[in-house]
Image (tube, rainbow, N blue to C red; front, top):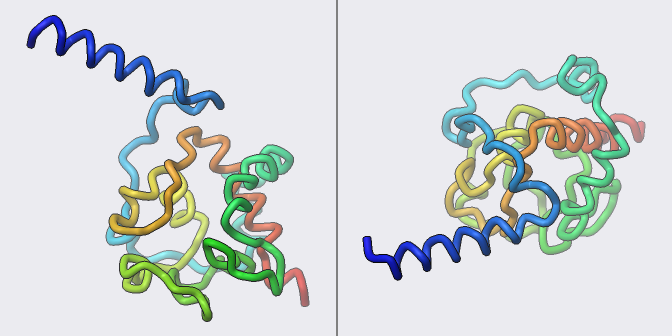
Length: 165
């Protein structure tokens, strides 16, 4: 490798590192993530049951709400909310991916063949492009596991369609 090539690579790496801004680059990348094709069978339970799991029971819901700002940029979370750039996420847990009416999904999502559970959402949030290659969502993911847990717990609460009954 020439000295000039090495200098350019170092420059490019420093630019990438400087773009983190929110601390995301300070975290280790998540361990090998699941993909939509390797999720396997998943348990579908009410949101309150997922929320009693130790992984989500003691999460910081305020941080989850803060983390959800990135979701709200493209998705509505409220019952009856409209589809935006992305589909409305209310009632998503326990439902097949890519099946919300009146939303034009990418081919990858239309044929995804998995159900949204906290496990699937966690894998998606860790590395969306790896989880479901070919999806159109321009979202890099949430590297920090604690932040993902906070976000998943928050979304379990605010998108739970059973709380509206």
